[in-house]
Length: 180
Image (cartoon, rainbow, N blue to C red):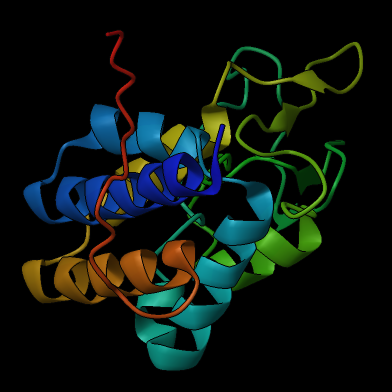
């Protein structure tokens, strides 16, 4: 639990996220995103919005996310709690919502405070948690679906925002005790 251990963990997570995006490993990327804090996901989404609005518009507005297809109505926008017209789930729509963006998702769904890595859906009885890590999985699927150039851009933004600035190598510090 030392600062060095924590720094190594963050560095490795950022490298793993970037690698998984570029190589298209959706399951590994989803698992790594699920370990990332909601606040870091918000920073990443804001970086995407500012640097590449076109990419921002390709994430979280599709139909593959968990929405309990047998009962969920057809939400058309994002919110921090699911109801008949609102999704707290990335890409949890019945039809593609091209006006919605990744940055709007993290803001409206309050990813910095809740709903990460698991979203909320609205079956007939009331809002409930979606499948475990549903938001992380949906973001991963949308990132992997980007074209090669976009993936490279996203990987760089992920590495930069998760590590908190610049990409630097952090060497592990270990201590060994010797009994004489």
